Image (tube, rainbow, N blue to C red):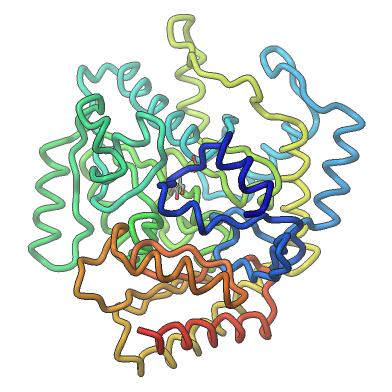
Length: 420
Ligand SMILES: Cc1ncc(COP(=O)(O)O)c(C=O)c1O
C-alpha cells in the first residue's frame, strides 16, 4: 500500500467515511483546470467540482496570484473594531450582485456557519420585534450543513440520527406538487405565522439533487410572505451560477430576507461564507445595547479568502463565465436527451450546469443505496472524479470544463450503465 495512505489511515479521520471505503483512497498530487492528478498517475475530470466548490478550474493562476499578493500585504487581522479593503470591497460587490434588499454582509467560514448565522439572526430579529416564540420551517429532503442548528433544519435521517434528541423542533414542509400539496403548504404556513422558513432555492443538493421550478419557488415564498414568515435562502450550493443565473433566487421576483453563500464564493480556493440581510434588520440590531449579535469566528473576513473571492468575481467578467455556464447547460441538455433512451435510469433532471438522474435499483433511492460503492470504484478507474448520492448520479462541473472533457465523462457514464 502507498506509504502516505498508510499514514493517513493511521492518523486522519475523513468526513462521511467508513472502514469499507478505506481501500478507495487516492492521493491527490496536483490539480489544474478541470482535472485532479493522483500520485498513481490518474488524470481525473472533476465533474463534481470537488464538493461543489470549484468554479473556474483548479489552481487558477489569477486567483493564486491574488492570494499571494494579499499574503504579502496582510494575511489575517482581527475583524472586531478593525476593517480592511478586501472585506469592504467584497461586501460592496456582493451586495450589488445579489437581489434587492440584501444590503449587509456578515462573514463566517463555511456553509454550515452561514446557515447558523442566518438562523440566529432571524430568530433574534423576531424576538427583538416582540414575537414570543418563533417556529422554524424547513423542507423535507433539505440539507443545510452539519453544525447543530444546520442539522436541525435538515432532513432528519442517517445524517442526524445520533443527535436527534439534541436538535430543536422544526416544522417540515413538502415541496408542493399538486393542489393538495399547496393546500397543505398554505395551512402549515397559516399555523406558523411569524416563523422563519429556510430553503435551498430550485435545487435540494445533498438531499439527492431534487429540483423544483421557479414558479414553485415564487409561490412558496409568496405564501410565506402572506403569513409573515421570514425567508432564508440557502444558496451555499446554488450560488455563483450553478443554476444558470448568478443566484437561484433571481428566478423569483421575491427577494429573501437572508441569504447564505459559501462553496464557490472564493472560486473554491479558500474557506469562507457570507450571510446577507437587509439594512432594516441591521439597524434594528444596532439600535440598542441589548441587541448585540453575539456571534463571530476567529477568521472572520480573512483577507486571503476575501482576495480569492474578489479574484473569482473578476474572473466571472474576465472569462465570460455566464456564457460558459450557458454552454455547459446546453451540453447537458443534449446528453440528457441521449440518457432518456437508457432503460437503466429515471428522473433525469437539470438546472443550469447541474444534471442529475437516478439509476433504477431494486433498493430504495437514497444515500445508502449499494450502487454508491460501484460508482466509487468504477469512475476513478475510468478518468472521472464523480461522487454519487447513493444511486443518484449528477454532474456539477467547474466552468473550465471543455466540450471534449464533457464528452469523455458522458461516455464513461454510458459505459458504466452498460455494466449494470
Ligand atoms: C445547501 C447547503 N447548505 C449548507 C451546506 C454546508 O456547507 P459546508 O459543508 O461548507 O459546511 C451545504 C453543503 O453541502 C449545502 O449544500
